[in-house]
Image (cartoon, rainbow, N blue to C red; front, side, top):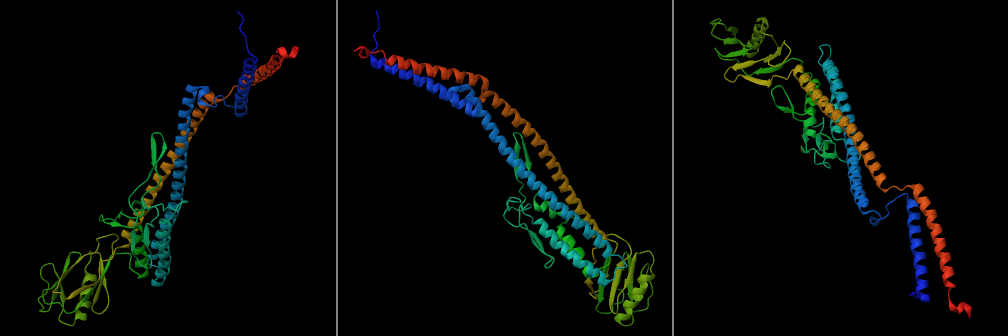
Length: 410
């Protein structure tokens, strides 16, 4: 039995064949122009799923790299800032040693103090450094709040940031902090007694001492308001000086001070007695009714006194902090900065290492992605030429079929 094809069906089949060949040719042409084998999920469902996973991995990797670059910029800026802080602290230490030298006059010390006060303001400015986004480096989570306030003019300093430290993910299983909280860097520096002191206060104290020509050694100034009563005492570095108005002489190990005259006479004799007492590490000076006690030994707690009078003595100036303790505190500040810089250097090394890992991982993902989606150009071009021939054949066949009609014989 012979199947009969209507003219319209023959026409439609010819058109469908041409359209199919055109679709295949267009698909191949797009693949060649883009260099991609998979243009839609239907081209290779399994491969398309793999490509989605790989693209997601690349997207995450891009975010890790953005975090890494951000952290590197912040840490590099912090390192540069702390380099400036280190240089400023080292300069202050040089000035302190120079200023407290015995050869420096009171005017010399005031001149040196001027620069030291300026260094205090410089440090506050460095501590308030911002990054490229306008965030403060040392404010913790309060990135838009100026962390440090105070100046050499006020001598008062405070911290308005918090202790927060941001962690940035720079790899699938690795995070890193982008800085240090300001209190850790510039505040909370423990002195020899365990008390917290800010770096700014340390520098300000040094400058203030130089400005007032304080000595490098411990010193105190006592003022006598009247002649101590008979039997009253003043103990200096363990030696008891007893005031004697009755002429009883030395009692036990005490040093007798004749206080039968005026208060100025009694203080003058007390000065002489202290200076004549060997081995106690103290010299006595002052004028009229004042007694200036100065240690002759470097360090802290080298000077002590106990008032055994009934309120005749007023401490006009308490025992000063010696230069050597201030230098120790300054060295503590320098040590803190060097510790933080070491942390920054370690983090920058971690970033460099992770950067190489991320780049290697990106190359591996891109290679795998390329193997899945990239087109075999030689095969595609051969297929493209074959499809062109097929399309031309379909078109020519359609023209021939169009002529297969009885109407052409009439």
